[in-house]
Image 1 (cartoon, rainbow, N blue to C red):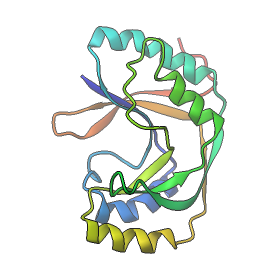
Image 2: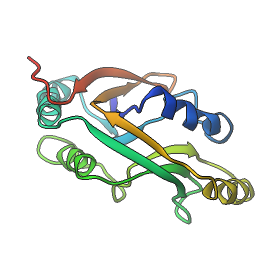
Image 3: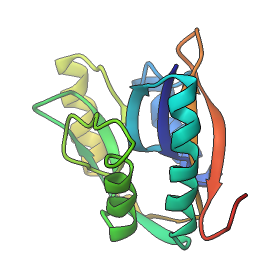
Image 4: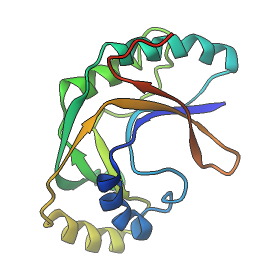
Length: 172
């Protein structure tokens, strides 16, 4: 099965991101706005059973924390992706690192850049127009993060929550 791990921000931040995603992100209907901690990976059910306790351990070792978003940025020239830039903080970096060592598949392709995608797969012309205007937009968003989600992909390519891991709590 195909899994991923992400943080879903609060509804106000999701609403802000979706205001752009409706227009500029063809994956709008497949997954809510999120911060990817671990890109999509394939494992069988037995392997996943071994990863769940590892995810619980990661979550138990983290206390809730604040994220700050203060600008729109892009991944140009690599891709025509536009995103809300989440300030990198040790908690995000530590979770990313922990989810790519030990029993976890080492499947990251790029350096970890915490972000919430608001546009992707844009034509060069549309990208130039949209990114130029959005990068001038003042963005000031803050959120408290207290959990992450293990997701799995359905046959229609949409993603749904498999399990939620709350920070700082002991789970049996």
